[in-house]
Image 1 (cartoon, rainbow, N blue to C red):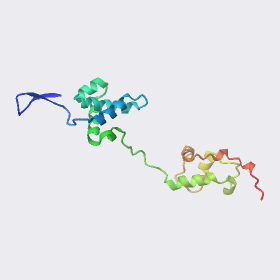
Image 2: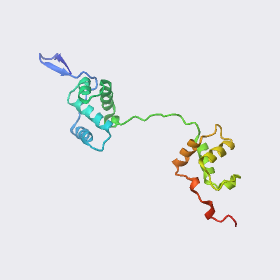
Image 3: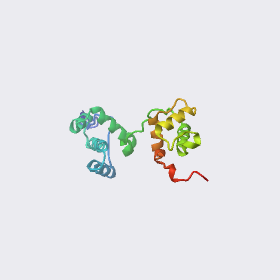
Image 4: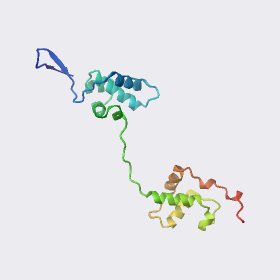
Amino acid sequence: MTIVPDLVGSMMKAVPSSPYVICLDDAERAELESVSRRATAPHRMVLRARIVLLADDGAGNSEIARRLGICEDTARKWRGRYRKKGLAGLCDAPRPGRPRVFPAAVAAEVKALACEMPAVSGTPLGRWSVPELARMAAAGGIAPAPSPSTVRRWLASDTLKPWQHRSWIFPRDP
């Protein structure tokens, strides 16, 4: 907080050092206090709630940083986000992530291959393994060829486990 003379009178007035002045109503304060005391809340949410509560109490960014043991930039960031977006601003922003190497159609083709018997594709196997599925996908013209770990991730996303399929239980002869 910075102390400046009031232009209207001769009194001194406290002005926060941050451009993001936080003024909470009773409901918002109760919600943030609840989050800051929750034992099951993620630490980052508790910390962000405490930043906003201290900012509402009139603390500057440097004081908030000192009290909570964080960087002043962190206090500034979450104070500003709360000012702009409210309670939703304290949640993590979506991250773009790495772009996909294979389109969804390629993953679907590999999953379809995993769901059929190896004998249908002319492979002399009793059941599929992940490396065999990757080799078969590469032989089928998928370029670049998916690695076995990629194929395993694709199958795990749909809980497919072709290597556990027991083809000997079902009679093959009509």
